[in-house]
Image (cartoon, rainbow, N blue to C red; front, side, top):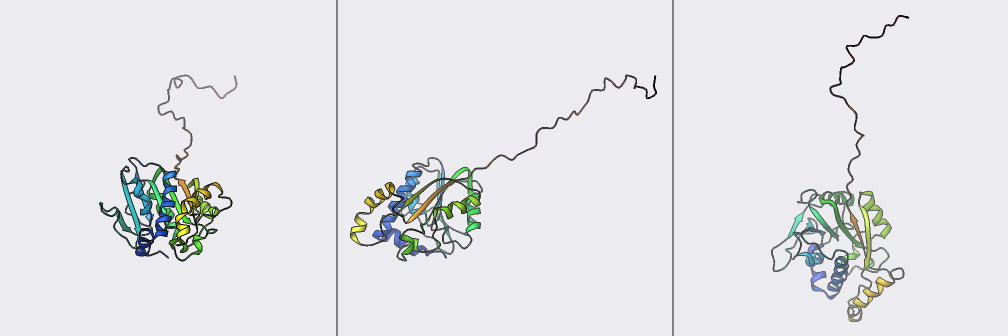
Length: 248
């Protein structure tokens, strides 16, 4: 079940906890993709908070928001780049996207396989996608106070297997949101410290979200070897007498 766009907007832009979550996840995205010069960058679900760093240098930025969720204009004060779309039919040409971010899209989808097929379709050969989902082992998936408490949480193994089944090649994975999903001032103020600590001891601390980067590798079709075909054979021997079948 998709979340409502107004609830997502209010969380990420109008609450302290949402701004903390936005910064923590966006910093990880920028670590993975420090630039997108002359590339087409798209986000599906409610990924627009993570796309702002690419507005200036990317060839094109597109914010895709599913119909059941609703759409809002974005970015504020600039030309709108967000669009309402069907969950499994995006208004994007095949192979057009270089970078794709999916946030609050996969875990809330009623048709996850068809959604992944659409992700595969719009990515160009060698394109990269970043799927961000709630961590089943983390605290954020257990809290109804944040959008990460909705939908199906994942383990990294489950996410990896689902994307491999669709043909994606996993490249790198990250975890974010190590601070508790609390509005208390102490946790909000110390959130950057918890993010730094989580990077060093990920085997001990469970982050709130999992991030898996995958690529689209299109292999050349296998063809049979070239056949040796003589289109115009020489007829130099046809004038010679044929051997007799009778014994000499």
